Amino acid sequence: MGDRDRAESLPPVAVADNNVPKSGKRNNKYLEIAFMSCVTGAGLLFGFSTALSNAKKKDVNAFDKGISIVKTVGNQSGGSLAMRALLWGTVYACTGFGVFCFTVWKAMGVNDLKEFRHKVGTYLPRLTPTESTNARTEFASLKDLLQYIIDESDRSKSEDNDKTKK
Image 1 (spheres, rainbow, N blue to C red):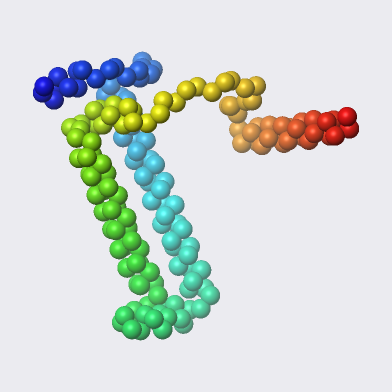
Image 2: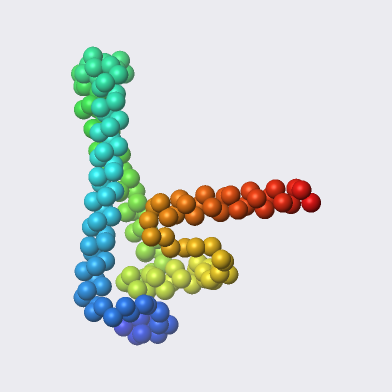
């Protein structure tokens, strides 16, 4: 059984069409991935730079000289040591996750992403829709959401008070 026959024998997957051509969906997916990558990178850069600036503000001399442990490593400043640690941590994390994904891919014996998706779907439990509740799920703004949370909290408190009075 060839790769093509194996892929054709897989059950079809329901996908929302939304009247968008396939190329449009693919472009949107790439744009979404690029956007989320940029947001993640900006968040990491902001967090790391904030941590470095706070460390430098606390003690400029210690930051420039480095701490006593650094002197055994070499004559590096705290900033350069932190950047080196961030670099190696990133390399180890990305490499480790890549090796993990490759190992899972090869262990499952799949040839493409579509086949991988179907195989993983057989191992994982099916998601069943939950019972619909009367709770709202869409809000016009953050203010609307927060007001809804406050109203629900007040309502539950008043119900609890009514129960304790009885």
